[in-house]
Amino acid sequence: MCARGVGTGLLTALLAGAAGPPPTDASWIEISPSRPEVVVFRSGSYSDALVRLALVNHSDRLVRVKDVRITYLKGDQVLDTEAPGPRFFTRDRVERPDRIERGAETDWPGICLSHLPEGAERVRFDLDLAIRRGLGQVHSHGRVDVALRHAPPPRILTLPFRGFWRVTQGHTCRTNHRLGGYGVDFAWDFVALDPRSGSSVDEVYSITRRNRDTVTFGRPVLSPAEGKVVRVVDDVPDNEGLHEYPRKSLLEDLGRPLWIFGNFVVLDLGEGQYLLLAHLKEASILVQPGDRVRVGDPIAAAGNSGNSIEPHLHVQVMDRADPADPGVTGLPGLFHDYVEITSQVREDHRDTSVRHAETGDPPEGAVVAAAAAELRGGAEPPVGSATEKAGKLLPGLL
Image 1 (tube, rainbow, N blue to C red):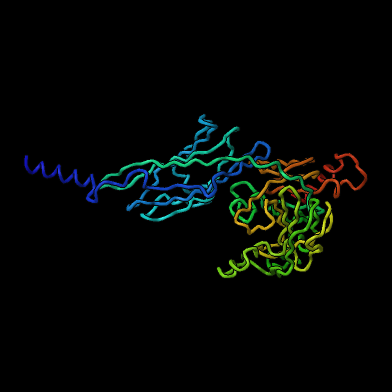
Image 2: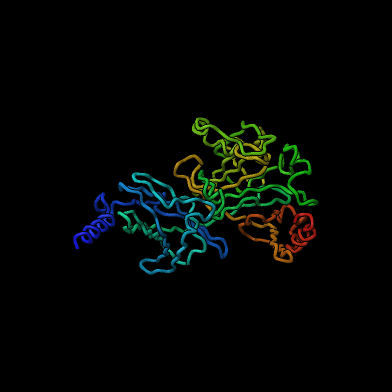
């Protein structure tokens, strides 16, 4: 009886933990969003929001996040609940640590919430937390709410080029644009296409990596909106012969944080909205601060400057004139009067769609051309002629 009593006491001590009781629930983990509210992006039937959370372990033990539950609320009404399970920690191509060392802070970036329920006002993250206590675990609970804010009405733009161009990167919340900062949240990247081949580069480009062997380099860039020029950078050399993205030292990043845009122009569109055109060709910019521009005015030539490995044009709308402003936020936009060609490969065939868009947000992979300027070729002929011409070019473009 005595020996059994000692054994039971030892087991109890191990389960309880020699280090004493765990810290109180309130002091385990502090959870905070990078922003108190996030913008909900909607395009047609699609919607998403991007959340970033910081977690600080205030305890003296390692804390493990065992599970995460996501709840969408309108007031106190639960609209939907998501339980992603273990894939939460690796989804969206982002690693999110589920173990937080004592006294440490960790970051959960790029939490992509897609297809949000209509009317959702906030999203709640409930975390099941655990620490070791002897041979067992003690669980606790962490919670944080993040307000959801609907994006302002999108700015209407015209395509800033002539000819056929492909959207190489859009702005769903799994893109680098939504993760990149500097107001690029709802940006587009475009490359020009040769309509005969459908390619953006010549056959030799994979070997030479020369800018002149691309369709984009040197192509005219036009103003997509009326506005006033407020900032110009025109002295950044174009990258040439790169097989990897350029790298900068920490000192270079701190000294010139906007090097990523290369040569760029910022337009004040009024009403607290600004437009940036980036990666322009060195010494090609035709405007200067103070100039007023109209839709279609020549601005510069497309280039390969900044954080760019291949010539392309970057377009973004933002709420500050300076994309390096810590408070800058990207704003959504829509393009007006263009032809859009999209294609999806099915198991045994390809589905292709050609449509004229009065206004729209061309998705990644779409081929676009300005309907009025490029395809109509006359004074207001029927829109059908625009889509018909695009249809004839499909074998090359796709």
